[in-house]
Image (cartoon, rainbow, N blue to C red):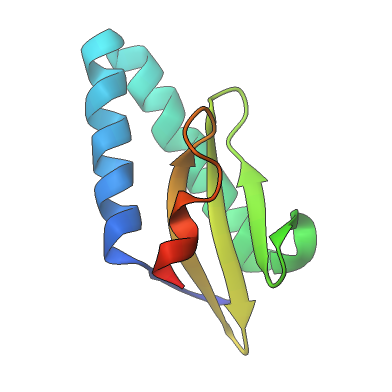
Length: 97
């Protein structure tokens, strides 16, 4: 299984997303956390599983939510660049690379 590193801004986006969904319903926030954890597990096991957002960066959609994980893998590590809301500007995370 690949190691995992996250960009500090991706951590903030995750916290913001959970906080927002918690204000809607705790059930939605809980489902989002579960979807995020499942996505991380799948990405760490098979980093090639998602399509390219912008080579070498990939996008893994957190279905059924309007969020996606933007990441790349190098060697034995997966780097999470963004927990991106899909309704926002699609390329904002490129400033982090």
